[in-house]
Length: 94
Image 1: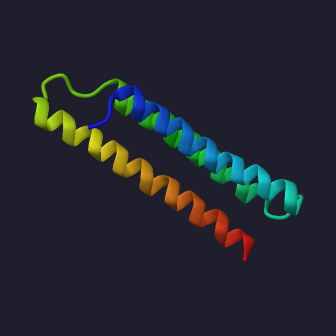
Image 2: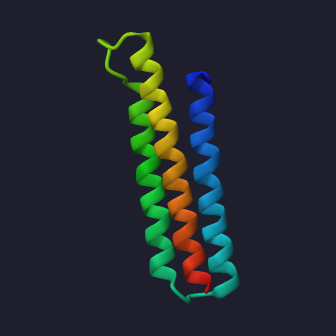
């Protein structure tokens, strides 16, 4: 399992990639669907804060195996959230 620091770096990297692609879309397409793109950015930033909260404060009563499962679940949720955000953005480009 990756360290907590690496998980936090992955969260920041993936969220920044989504935001970067959103800004690129806004740059290329102007005001077309601007409110939808802004909603995608807001959602992913809120999820980022949620992921940091989950990583920073796991339940102290968990044993080692449960802690690993907790971090794996956070990572899995992160990947599905990022994939969902990219899917929403790609739907706007069609």
